[in-house]
Image (tube, rainbow, N blue to C red):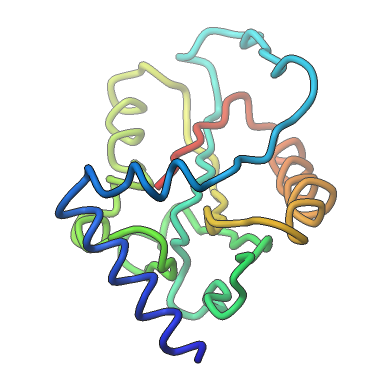
Length: 173
């Protein structure tokens, strides 16, 4: 049954990529997790050209040697993967059944724009890149939401703080 479910999810993702109008039915049925209060906005404390930048993606990308995200659980996988800035472009795979990632497999910059950020570093638009970045699987629902909020996101935020990252760019997939 789980093999059929994964096939169905991949098929739907491909179909929606070919016929975007079909996505309206799926979007209408989806009920997003809602938070209370305003989303906090923090003004950067220094100019971009002096900032250390990291990426966090929900694309399901990870190094080949890392454990793939769990595609058997219909509520997703609230864990994360640490990505090595120097290796990820040459050593990655994407484990995510809920979107068509064939283009991202050909060009990782679609979901993790490291080369574009490296160009901005070279042009002195941003200061530098962090040595590590973080990836989640974007489909996380139900019983995994508290784990994501209270554990995984907190751990990643702590690592970003310990790395003294000034700005984080979130790239959804």
